[in-house]
Image (cartoon, rainbow, N blue to C red):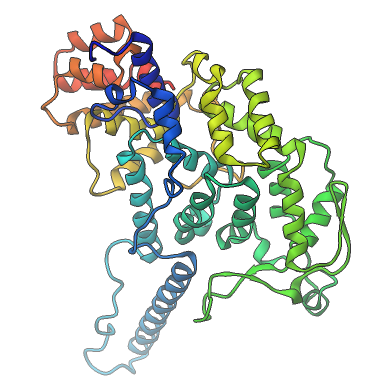
Length: 473
């Protein structure tokens, strides 16, 4: 550290990077030490800080149409193969025609997996290359709050994050909420695309009914939170309101795979949700409910608590939660102001470093600290799978847990990953110097001693990555 940097500045720089970012990379700790909070706040002033510009990535509609075509081609190949096999079995095939020429499936991942891998690389590259990573951490937080699963909508998960989350990370909660709930990935993941009002034109003809999954999760997980006063009747009414929020069939060349409001599926009439009455205004009826839920007092407290829990502590300081709640209400849900309030609150900086980094954050922090490159993203994906946090594959609509208890059992697996990473790391840097660049004043005497006494360089690097100071925010 430079001689003109105060010990408190150095410590705050290290804390800024580990608690609010993805950990130090290169000389980041030295560069931030003069004004750690200012460096993080400066990230919020770049309106496109969260956006991904990559012409090679498909939007959600393009991905849906491409995968539809891919699957149709696969079906045609299988049909041709079965027909040929039947002819051969019956003795009706021409000589030498036992297998259709050039019809064998191509080796390697299919198109849905290819799309997923391309999106995963863009996702991880942003975190690995970020200066401090605060805005990118916000992207990860909101992407988990409004989660969808690759197990159900694999080709769309990356586009969902790029289209519904990233553009609004520094915008307003209400805008993100509308973008998320009307995105094809969410409509498919929570089964709203096929939800039909019983008294709609389609409902009367097909005798099909509503699906309450999306309505319930919006209220319970995305906005108000559990046990906040709404009733089952509210859920049912809200589910009726968002009937007709569906997806253009991907077989359509014009707009296939994109959001569509279908009035023939929409339940007509007035509905009451959470104490408000909403007239039959088609798509606008659902948008009005979302806006009121975004501005509900319970939503402000729910979001404030989750944000404080994610960045600071499993049991977050009450004064920090209250400051975030007030900021959310006063700014009409400005997520940029919410992030500023987090950074400017003393409690966010003075809370003990007791909270475990989630597996994905720890993996990225480790790669940044020891300078590992990932031209192929699959090792990162495989490591996340091993550690129990598979990318964009949460176990339930509530997303991955954000408390230590969910991740303690996976610490043994982190040792294996740390050893593998240490063997891949560049041999140029002295491990004792890595302690300075990766932890600086956060490193305890015990950690410094363990690294210094390691018998080999890989062992020293693994000990650094598994040190309590590196594992925690």
